[in-house]
Image (cartoon, rainbow, N blue to C red; front, side):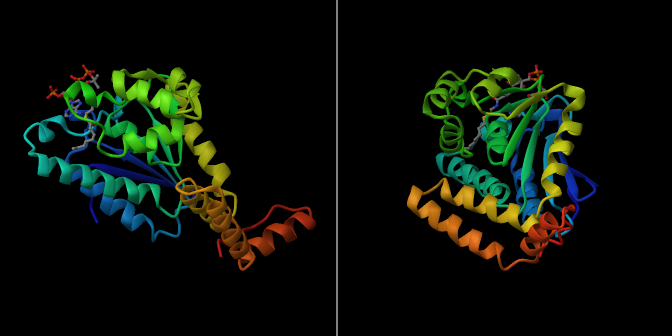
Length: 259
Ligand code: CO8
């Protein structure tokens, strides 16, 4: 399928996806949300891709949902628009491969929520992250009230959401919203370095670990342990487990085939 706003570059099993709608700072309109949904649906079947890096073109990662489009919505249409974003972001969160958000600039509103649906976030020193929705008379609608407190705790999440203020990359690091802050010109290299570290491991073990963490975070500890136990057991039915342990015992690097 051809995508108008999503550009991809493939490097050694790593896919870099760039949201390219610079004239509106990559604002998420319905068309772009549908593209993200379709794109990440297709990505699930791409066995050659081990890790995805998501970034934005120009000075924004994503400056939010499209305010022009939202300004005329009725209550029912607003609900549907929120649902469209949520569906797309669930596709990203539940993708069977890790997704790294490389936050190059503004990640506001829907942009912060998009980053929150990724597995790992790293930020350029230039990044500004926030949930400014209440200043527009709305609440976050693509998962911000749910994923932000889960990611950083309620006090910092409520502070960000109630004030609507942007936080700097360093502040985002301090509150645990991003796991690394890097020089702007190094952002993609650092994201690739991280992606390569993940890609050299067993793809199937990484997939099971992602699924156990994400499902477990939605449940109580005992149920989470059930998921971990089940996935751990499943690993022993894989060729990667045999290879990983054999390679260790033979003092060589493992050559995983992802099966
Ligand atoms: N939507 C539409 N257009 C946008 C958006 C946006 N979110 N952000 C920027 N643009 C456009 C501007 O209108 C401008 O267009 P034009 O050149 O035609 O006037 C162009 O992008 C460049 O922007 P600026 O000139 O404003 O650039 P600055 O560098 O001066 O400022 C900012 C950059 C600070 C990022 C500023 O553009 C800004 O504040 N943007 C809006 C940020 C924002 O409020 N985002 C949150 C939106 S609400 C949201 O995301 C809710 C998600 C859940 C929705 C649920 C649905 C019910």
